[in-house]
Image (tube, rainbow, N blue to C red; front, side):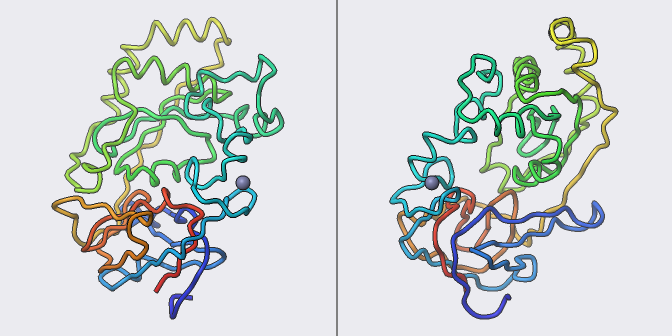
Length: 278
Ligand SMILES: [Zn+2]
């Protein structure tokens, strides 16, 4: 599948941790039904050309512009997964009876969620559905991660994250992440510090949702090593909207970014874009 030209709509790269922590994360570029093993392409030329077409990743309809990383406008306005409460889970409005799709909400939001600490460009807090570990961390380019608490719903994870956000950020500085100048952290020590700082808030949430609602994890520490031959010194971004052809020598892959000698590209941003890859 790696030979010749493949064509299809971009999807988020498939990503798997290495078989051991010392071995690199493995990536596959996905275009339509095609999969290209990217680790094998390190050090080689890679060319992506956007045809000008974008297909909604949900309904397949052609769309002039992509919304929320891959949706057409009607899907963006209608789907529960595109609602603002996904980004801000503490604003879940299921109980007001206004969930855009209660069945979807039950399947995705009323499931165990994890509150974690990660080191992508420094310390950050985040939440994810339990089944999304470790994909979520790899998509962020985290070099370390530590799950710290488990809760029953996405909304509860949002409440917990709000408490932590008073003491720690929740963003990745993608430029720093791509430059590879990220120092290792003692995540267990950070956890202990943050658990102490949020103790009274967590106690309040427990009294509201039940003593068992927020469960401390004696989390396993995860460390990830990315397939990167050379980190860029200066970050230049490629953008299909401005330049339909992106090519260069593939020097690394981290998060959902390709690092070419000519610049970096966040493939996730271009989900649904029809490209040919050579
Ligand atoms: Zn659509």
